[in-house]
Length: 357
Image 1 (cartoon, one colour):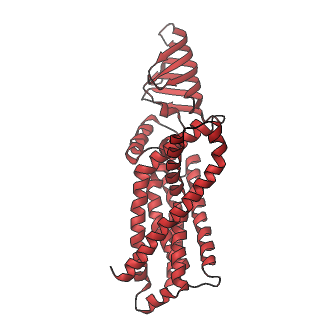
Image 2 (image 1 turned 45 degrees about the vertical axis):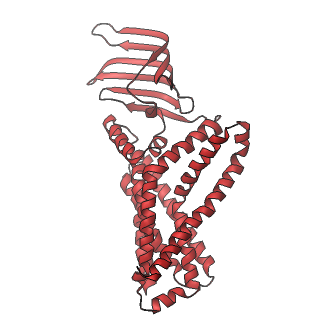
Image 3 (image 1 turned 180 degrees about the vertical axis):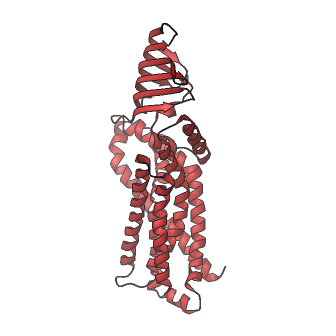
């Protein structure tokens, strides 16, 4: 690599991480100001608060990754342009594509970093971040899954009208077992509670019906403890469960849910595909940012930053809206997740061609 490559690469990576170090503390300060009263009211242990903000840092940085990347490239490339350094570089015989090379090398490092974060670190941070919020900060806003219906094995189905993540309690629970299309047995309970210590369930107003040839056998108990072959995670919200898993865990989870005939497969696939699409976006956003900011404009760096922030937020908007559509409709999750990259990829090619003229 030439001196010019090292110069641009160091500025690229240095500015990116400076942006993270600059904006993450601002995010933490805003979050502390918003939550300080609840933290003091609930007398939350300092160790738990520190763990929460450690997880918040990772969660926040991952969520705003496109904006950090975009602003950092536009910032230092605009400075190069305003100091006529880019003109000097291109006038020395270096082509625009050759000038772009250190940016692409930097994007490769960022992509690998984002990929590893998404596979191994972000899921654990997401779990800690959400657990803290719903354990301490949203006690009055009980997190519930409505109308849980799942196939837990080839011939068993469970249903609950709602399930509270915070209290591990479900209501109007039923478990039905079939032999092909014939009902074999049915368990009902007004309330079901998961016991963490013993990893079993307590059923209140328990009733079991065993279908016989002539007569049915009915069992009733006010309270009964039982073990089932489904996990409490099967009753938690789809996205919440998927976001907290590593790639291997998520792949296994998706295969299990496919066998169960889960209706939430699209939600799980959106989370999986985003782990791959976000690193690829580093290349696309890098090309757009360089093309936008490598030319001098009337208004200087401010215009470039305004344009860059607008494009970054537009990318995030596309990403969120198509992800939601895939979860709530029949749109293919793979298409929905990659559509923003396809649109902005086409924009990157168009801007790059204009910048090379």
